[in-house]
Amino acid sequence: MVKHQIFNHTSDLGAWPDLTVSLKKVKLPQDGADEATKTQWVQNHLRVYGYTACPTTGKFDRATENAIKAFQRHFYPEENPTKVLGQADPATIERLASLVDRYVPAEEYNKYVGA
Image (cartoon, rainbow, N blue to C red; front, top):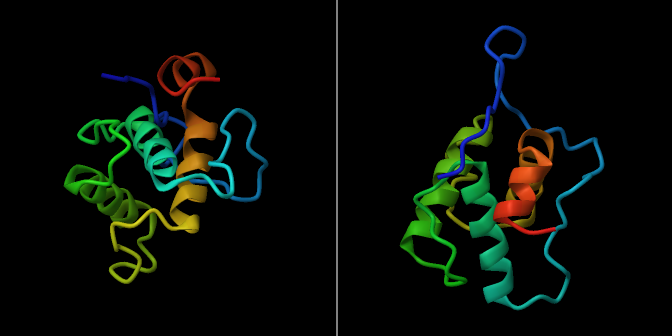
């Protein structure tokens, strides 16, 4: 199980994606990548961020859909429930990438996702 500190109770109010900052370590799925590759990317990044009930299989299954829905419920409060579809749309991928890039230490990211 991946453990990392998402936020510091004394200085932060919580984790939130910063979509204005360029990604430093996270590489988005390549345009034209097949669905299994994209699904595996989403599963890996959900797991490293803490959604550990989503195994990395490369198959879009119920566990993947539920993890995406949980992520969307948390990180789309202003659009809830219209954005909670359980699909890895570009906006969801962008928010997930931003959060992983911002809050997961490089060593953990490289260990669980790869450089």
